[in-house]
Image (cartoon, rainbow, N blue to C red; front, side, top):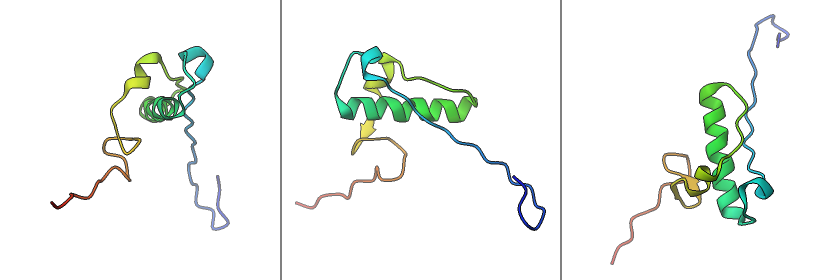
Length: 78
């Protein structure tokens, strides 16, 4: 994209897809985790990626992949 000041900016989009019918589940949490995993596979490879059954069991914290923003959980005090 060329901006008004003639600078060129590269724009890209990544989408993670986890179709429940092909993954054999309707569990929204598992599908979101699988879609998130597919999204990051796509970002790293530069290709379109559909989630696989293995992506349904990706490790997560607070419903997000470890290391992603929002995965920090405050320590509890006794």
